[in-house]
Length: 186
Image (cartoon, rainbow, N blue to C red; front, side, top):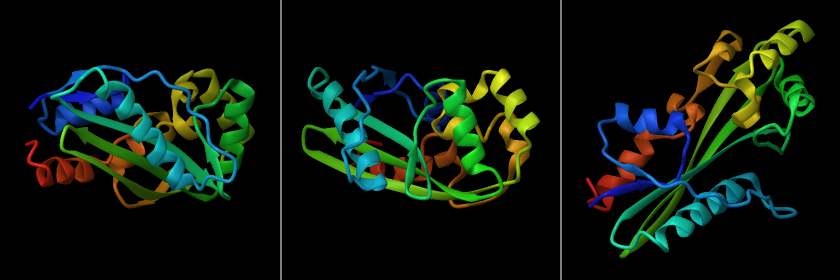
């Protein structure tokens, strides 16, 4: 059965390719808005489910895989920064602290809908204002949840992680493979 990835994320595509999975890309362009009072994990899982549903409507008889990654610090959800000022705010919040990266994953097919999530703890070193300015000037943080890419230049500030590294990149590969196997997609 074909796997449809409901994402244009090059990081998710690379992770799936590295895992040896074949898939096609059909992006789900839906608004990502958190409901008032919605817990972070519920938000990420709902977004993954809505992305999968948006694609599945036109991709019946295919297995749709969707994900949504957020960064959580002090119960604040940090998605992708809106602009440089927002990226600066996020990086200041993360500086010298632990935060969580949470990815909601949805696998949707004719016979099932499976929604789960993965949480990874990430520890950031303290960032100077100069570090923040130069990192933002690189452009790297502008399309990343929490305004950083663990696999990029921000790796120099990550002192420790607890959990799945690929989750921080954007897709918890071990969880996805487990789900695919349980539903006999692979």
